[in-house]
Length: 213
Ligand SMILES: C[S@@+](CC[C@H](N)C(=O)[O-])C[C@H]1O[C@@H](n2cnc3c(N)ncnc32)[C@H](O)[C@@H]1O
Image 1 (cartoon, protein in one colour):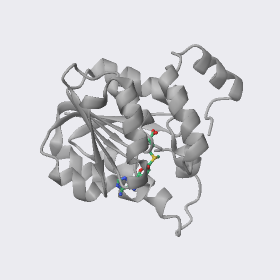
Image 2 (cartoon, helix red, strand yellow):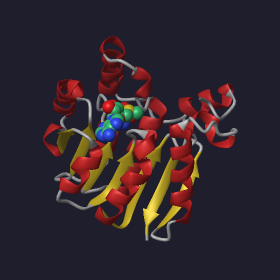
Image 3 (cartoon, protein in one colour):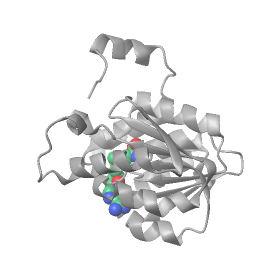
C-alpha cells in the first residue's frame, strides 16, 4: 500500500539509496521459487532498515520473521565488525535459501539462524540486544514485545513492521479479523508502555520505532 500519492512515492524512492545487487538477486529468486513473495521488505524499506541499523551500529540484533533473509541482510549492513544477528523463522523450508544468500553476502558468519516458533526460541537465546526487528505473525506481536523487552539494552531500539496493516487500523473493526485487532492492541501497548518511547513512521505498511528508556 502507498500512503503517499504514487508520484511522490516514486520521487522518494528515486532520491533514496539504490538496492544492492545481491538483494535484487534474492528478490528475483524469491519471486521465482517461494510462496507469498509479497512478504519481502522491498527495496525502499530495506534501505530504511539499513540506514537505521547503520545509525545504531549494533553489536547484537534479533529479528523475528526471517522469510528469505532480505531484511536480515539490510540490518546486517549496520552491524559492528564482530556483531551478530539472531534471526528466527518458523518455516524450515526457507533455511537453505537464507543461508545461500547470507554466505554470499559476506555476513554469513555473523548471522545465526533459528528455525521454529519465535515464542519458544526467544527465551532460549542467551543474549541482550541493541536492535530488535519484529516482522513475524501479527497475532503474536504483543507477546513478542513482552518476551524481548527485558533482553533489550537501555537505549536499544525495537522496529515493528506492518503497524498500519494496509490502513485497516483506522477502518471499522471486523470482530473476526484477529490480525487487525492484534495490530491495534500492539500499537496501543507501544504507545502506553512506560519503558519505551515510540514514533510511528508511515513508511510502506507502517514501521514503528520504539526506544527503551
Ligand atoms: C513478513 S515475513 C518476514 C519478511 C522478512 N522480514 C523480510 O523483510 O523479508 C513473516 C515471516 O514470519 C514467519 N513466522 C510466522 N509465524 C512465526 C512464528 N510464530 N515464529 C517465527 N516465525 C514466524 C513466516 O514464516 C514468515 O517467513
